[in-house]
Image 1 (cartoon, rainbow, N blue to C red):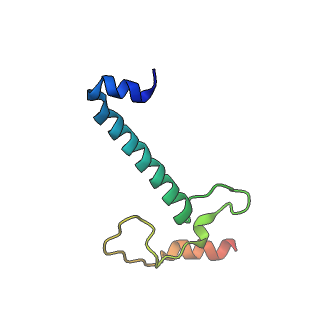
Image 2: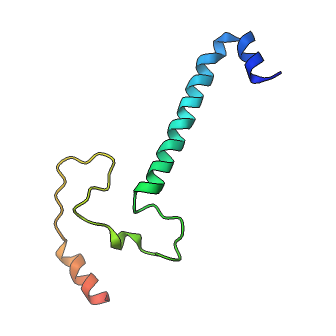
Length: 84
Protein backbone atom coordinates (compact mmCIF):
# COMPACT_ATOMS: atom_id res chain seq x y z
CA UNK A 1 0.00 0.00 0.00
CA UNK A 2 1.51 3.33 -1.02
CA UNK A 3 1.46 6.53 1.01
CA UNK A 4 -1.10 8.16 -1.28
CA UNK A 5 -3.48 5.21 -0.99
CA UNK A 6 -3.12 5.32 2.78
CA UNK A 7 -3.87 9.04 2.84
CA UNK A 8 -6.93 8.54 0.65
CA UNK A 9 -8.27 5.86 3.01
CA UNK A 10 -7.42 7.59 6.27
CA UNK A 11 -7.90 11.31 5.83
CA UNK A 12 -7.21 12.03 9.50
CA UNK A 13 -3.50 11.29 8.90
CA UNK A 14 -3.09 14.17 6.41
CA UNK A 15 -2.41 16.91 9.05
CA UNK A 16 0.10 14.66 10.83
CA UNK A 17 2.00 14.01 7.60
CA UNK A 18 1.82 17.71 6.71
CA UNK A 19 3.25 18.87 10.05
CA UNK A 20 5.96 16.20 9.92
CA UNK A 21 7.03 17.28 6.43
CA UNK A 22 6.98 20.94 7.50
CA UNK A 23 9.14 20.21 10.57
CA UNK A 24 11.65 18.16 8.57
CA UNK A 25 11.88 20.87 5.90
CA UNK A 26 12.40 23.57 8.55
CA UNK A 27 15.11 21.59 10.33
CA UNK A 28 16.93 20.89 7.08
CA UNK A 29 16.70 24.52 5.99
CA UNK A 30 17.97 25.81 9.34
CA UNK A 31 20.87 23.34 9.31
CA UNK A 32 21.93 24.38 5.82
CA UNK A 33 21.58 28.08 6.71
CA UNK A 34 23.86 27.75 9.73
CA UNK A 35 26.32 25.55 7.84
CA UNK A 36 26.84 28.00 4.99
CA UNK A 37 26.45 31.39 6.71
CA UNK A 38 27.91 31.05 10.20
CA UNK A 39 31.70 31.12 10.53
CA UNK A 40 31.80 29.15 13.77
CA UNK A 41 30.33 26.03 12.12
CA UNK A 42 33.16 23.99 10.62
CA UNK A 43 33.36 20.66 8.84
CA UNK A 44 37.13 20.32 8.45
CA UNK A 45 39.04 21.00 11.66
CA UNK A 46 42.45 20.17 10.20
CA UNK A 47 42.62 23.24 7.95
CA UNK A 48 41.42 25.67 10.67
CA UNK A 49 41.55 24.21 14.20
CA UNK A 50 40.56 27.52 15.87
CA UNK A 51 37.85 29.19 13.73
CA UNK A 52 36.84 31.61 16.48
CA UNK A 53 40.10 33.52 15.97
CA UNK A 54 38.84 34.83 12.61
CA UNK A 55 35.48 36.17 13.82
CA UNK A 56 34.75 39.86 13.39
CA UNK A 57 33.66 41.17 16.81
CA UNK A 58 31.63 44.00 15.28
CA UNK A 59 29.44 41.58 13.28
CA UNK A 60 26.64 39.91 15.28
CA UNK A 61 26.92 36.12 15.32
CA UNK A 62 23.44 35.27 16.58
CA UNK A 63 20.29 34.91 14.52
CA UNK A 64 18.78 37.87 16.39
CA UNK A 65 20.96 40.32 18.32
CA UNK A 66 19.66 43.25 20.33
CA UNK A 67 21.94 46.03 21.64
CA UNK A 68 25.23 44.22 21.10
CA UNK A 69 28.23 46.10 22.44
CA UNK A 70 31.64 44.49 22.27
CA UNK A 71 34.63 45.47 24.37
CA UNK A 72 37.88 43.53 24.47
CA UNK A 73 38.67 41.82 27.76
CA UNK A 74 42.06 43.03 28.94
CA UNK A 75 43.12 39.73 30.50
CA UNK A 76 42.31 37.77 27.37
CA UNK A 77 44.16 40.25 25.15
CA UNK A 78 47.21 39.96 27.45
CA UNK A 79 47.16 36.14 27.30
CA UNK A 80 46.65 36.26 23.54
CA UNK A 81 49.63 38.55 23.08
CA UNK A 82 51.81 36.35 25.29
CA UNK A 83 50.97 33.15 23.41
CA UNK A 84 51.79 34.52 19.97
